[in-house]
Image 1: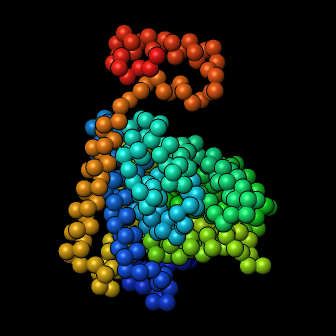
Image 2: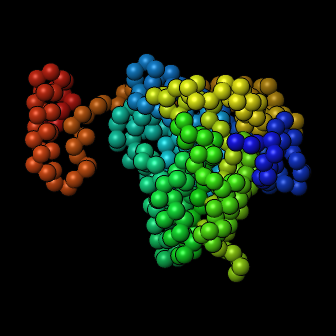
Length: 364
């Protein structure tokens, strides 16, 4: 994936220097520091989650390291009641909406953790690739029909653009002019397949033209650029001009430093030199350099932020570890009335737990 010669929206260069002072979004110092804190919190949560997974206390986990600028920057552009629909890697979006033990408990195997997201206007994550894109269009279409001004922002990876759900959602959004922002985190790899194997198009953003909507390509390692293009897209979704359409496709050119998930070995399909080149563009280092250069951040403030981040994540991990497991709950929500075969399976499962497991964790 070509980054050096890419034609995309950018506010900060790789050293954190504004490419155009007039392009810096009008955000107060407190908001900029909060954005930096949330990026640091996202990175630290990601590192702790991987460590916990290696200890056998967490299920398969998808790392977001390298993509914090796209996730946090775009989420800061939203209103609190705008809906976020994410794939499974966009932990930064959840962090902005307040990371708590419920979210981590989901990754520890408790489905109830997903339910806590609804109060934050975050749709439960979707493991199946691109299935949530039609959901986002349906939700945003409902907002349009009801006459409210909510937008739905849907995150997905470049691999999702190879799925039929992507094209169906884009087509429906274009035809019915829904207030949907499609945010593609193009990190260059769909597991082991490079983006060149996903599409013959020069960019993902240009696919928007086929569906009659705006397409924007942005530097996904630049949080301020991601904020800017998402802010513009959301405003267009709420109240488009006469010659505009509501939906927008954003392609954030970014990278994942780690494996696709903790079950993946990226050394099999990509060169470590490539990873190191992208780490030189790290969104946290870039944003930190900007904040220091402009006098918004110094060593004392940075130490305070990092200490607060560590305390926050430690408290989340401790609280999530206290969540009691209820293995029988896996049968509760797939059907209103369990089919006979599943009733039989449930009875057998409860019998095994009764004989060998902790009876206190099993409901009658």
